Length: 265
Ligand SMILES: Nc1ncnc2c1ncn2[C@@H]1O[C@H](COP(=O)(O)OP(=O)(O)OP(=O)(O)O)[C@@H](O)[C@H]1O
Image (cartoon, rainbow, N blue to C red):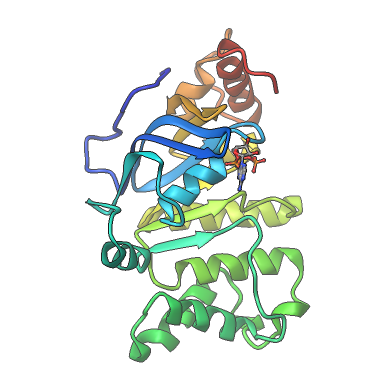
């Protein structure tokens, strides 16, 4: 399904909706009239470097507002400080690189995120335990952040993103830098998150998309060029037999969309 128009999946109200969003950084148009809906389950944002994926995530996280167009999160337009503050309490974000105090323990790091997102103090310890359990870091709760491996650090990043039981989880390239075994563990985790929230993840890794994602958006040069399921993306490639749904089929479908839009990769 090729799009430059508003589409919905499943007919239910989307968790997040972007309507004709344009974002400019001085002379660069990072997003150009983007329409997109984000539903419960896992959505992949695919696109080459500079396509606008991080910028779109920054709209969904309320870190930025579009120069034109509108964003609605959890059923309400993102406008006004009070509304933004309320919405932020129900969003979880894992940026590509995130800051932390190396001397904080993992537990303190996640507790701090819970406090920032206004998890009530009486519930905080339980929520931190729950988030560390989800990413299987309970054993390392007292380890200092500065002493974690890359994979553990990513998992701690996810724990802080989900400690407030968010309705919308935004993950910017969550599996970058992980070894193959860690990536497989992550896919299981991301699928589990998608069962309770709308998860949006930007990625370059076709295999992750094939294994994990229910919905796919392809952004090219700031424009939304495809919206559909992994099977629909695979079907964009000539000769796709309609049965194989793996990383190479996703990659072939993605390259077909890129080729059709004349974008260099
Ligand atoms: N703060 C900024 N100032 C100026 N230009 C920016 C800024 N942030 C992003 N851009 C530009 O906006 C465009 C979209 O960038 P963005 O980071 O959203 O893309 P991306 O798809 O996330 O890329 P990547 O896969 O490399 O992370 C690019 O041309 C980028 O150079």
